[in-house]
Amino acid sequence: MDKPAAARPQPMRPEIPGLGNDPASVRQRVEMLERVLERSFTIPVIRRDVGLDAIAGLVPVLGDVLTAVMGAYVVWEARNLGLPKWKLWRMGANVAVDTAIGAVPLVGDAFDLFFRSNSRNLKILRKHLDKHHPQARVIEG
Image (cartoon, rainbow, N blue to C red; front, side, top):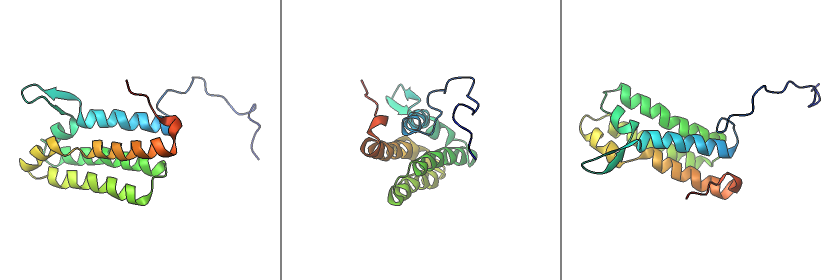
């Protein structure tokens, strides 16, 4: 039997923004992760944004595995939000292609600069959230 709401222990601190399971928190986490993986800083000479995905890819095997796990986390969050299976497959394919080609020495490092699987997956997730969870929409300015 459940306790009444007043009898349940209350958290001692207010909820930290971005740590909930609501669509707005998930969106915030995924956007932050995409920024870290794809657009952390700019290469001055070519004026190209790069992130952890391209840098970690320079470390054989370990870097590619690390970024694949982080990309898979985005797909997992999308699954928890209830995205259709075909969108999840598409997101998973983006991560798989990025991981497979990114693992090839030299070619994969160049590929990581141009194929941004996490940005593509964020676009799929944003489209879903904007349609099905409009209250999670963020006004960008």
